[in-house]
Image (spheres, rainbow, N blue to C red):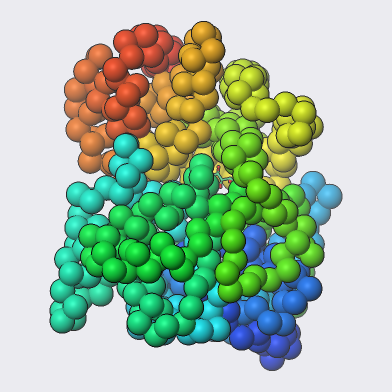
Length: 470
Ligand SMILES: NC(=O)c1ccc[n+]([C@@H]2O[C@H](COP(=O)([O-])OP(=O)(O)OC[C@H]3O[C@@H](n4cnc5c(N)ncnc54)[C@H](O)[C@@H]3O)[C@@H](O)[C@H]2O)c1
Ligand SMILES: O=P(O)(O)OC[C@@H](O)[C@@H](O)[C@H](O)[C@H](O)CO
């Protein structure tokens, strides 16, 4: 993967013989073997008091690479905790099997095994294939293709979307009479358990009404608020681990020291003692989710679009720009007015965010955060805008995030978004028609409100004038 500097080329590759960590039995199946899963859920599982009972089989989403690299290391990798004070290194061994997501046979085998108690998800917001109305987009080409595969049991085709694979796995679990289990959604979505449930049920119903009823009675969808800033790994990170640890790890993960996990829901087949590692279990998750999605992720999206328009590359760089920082603080003021005050300790949370965002040793690239904006803005900007307007205020700071996105879409090349085709078509239009087409992709209701379109239009014009944020 990297061009190994000479001094590290002779080092042994990280594996369970280099670091003898016993393998726990697979009881968790994960979908979305990315950086975040490894810095968060796998870290919490390793730090649970009963970690020896809980192994994870982790499946990639779209490509086999991550599974191949990790398999060559027996599932082991290094978490590099990075702060201004320096780096610390820990080998994580809770992933006992790393598998290409296209290996649907192995996925089905594990989901239908009675020992499997949990399916965790970090498949990204866009992968839930929700339309602007919040329901499964059954017209999305990959959903249409998977529904066709599911409908024809005799066909040799395999589902390609995570939802299709999950539905096939759950059908096999029902057929094997392997008992209930929990699906734990760890993507940045509001009400993520409910969203996951809707998406799975939407696909299951179209496939087999009996399966939908079985899922309803046997599968618990747990909602979670997840937090740990985890940028993409770089070649320099790989070299830093080699230099510090004395082994070669081709797949380390760099993360900030802060981490947080709030969960709400039932675990009918049990779960690790994640609370030993600091996870918190609550009855009412919405305030925690909104605090995190609006204050942290909302500020991230604002910085991603406004910051890039102003020539910045990372979160820390954009935050050091007074204009961007003011736009963030204004957005936080609006968001905070719509969060229940004391329990959530908003003041402390904001102060901590400024410190976390300012961690300049974490190179968190705005281009990565900017992806899938149409889905993200629906959860990060629109609810605050709506709440502000319902309270008789303008919602200008939330509208600014949307305005920045509209300006960004006109400049970005190779935009990654589930609505990329619609965005490209909108950008062929001009003036008000273009703006309305873009807003409609985020949320059709926005276009119905003339005052909102006026507000966003005025703010977007400022961006066109050299990224002016006022
Ligand atoms: N990185 C973070 O700081 C962070 C923090 C909190 C929550 N999250 C959540 O975790 C998700 C994943 O983040 P990451 O940093 O691990 O990303 P990543 O790119 O490292 O990994 C994403 C994983 O999901 C799969 N995937 C991506 N898009 C898919 C699609 N359309 N269909 C199927 N599979 C798909 C990928 O193949 C990969 O396995 C985020 O989208 C977010 O919801 C991330
Ligand atoms: O991961 P995404 O793409 O949903 O959002 C980008 C960032 O806002 C996000 O990864 C945060 O860093 C993370 O949510 C912090 O816990």
